[in-house]
Amino acid sequence: MKLSPFPLPGLTAWLVAGVLALSPGSSSAAEKGAATVPAGTNAAPQELAVPLAIFDVTSSPVKDPFFPLSTRQAVAAAATNGPAISASSFTLKGLSGSTNQRLALINNRTLAVGEFAEVNTSAGKVKIQCLEIRETSVLIRTELQTEPLELRFEDRTHR
Image 1 (cartoon, rainbow, N blue to C red):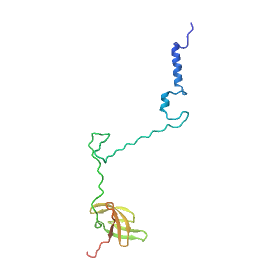
Image 2: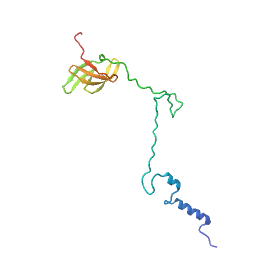
Image 3: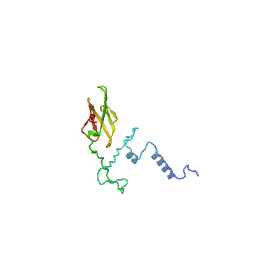
Image 4: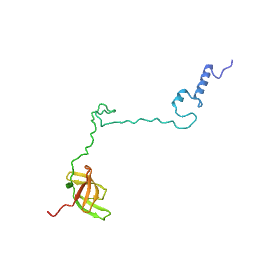
């Protein structure tokens, strides 16, 4: 009696079919549909565009998608119309520099044309911009107003 190297002949056929299915030259239909790269190239697969999440918290009512039971309210916009600041809140203390580079001393802060600074006033700190330095006055603009203010030296003859 002669013994076969494989005890079951049907098992041999299944092993051969499995090896052929797993060989690198063959591919299944599922693999062909999943890849977006053309066959025979080393190009990277195309990336899908991921949509961006947009959360509008200015609308009312606001519902947080991650915490739907939260009691947060819509964010109120910061008020830009503050109290009007007059020129009397600022004191022009001095002018210096050459005609090409003038400097103004306003509420103990030195400014050149175009510079921004925070100055102390009776209403608190106010951000100003020096627009123009003239012979005896200065034009400034505060962050709360659109109209420029003209600062002049104080009249000290009445003191």
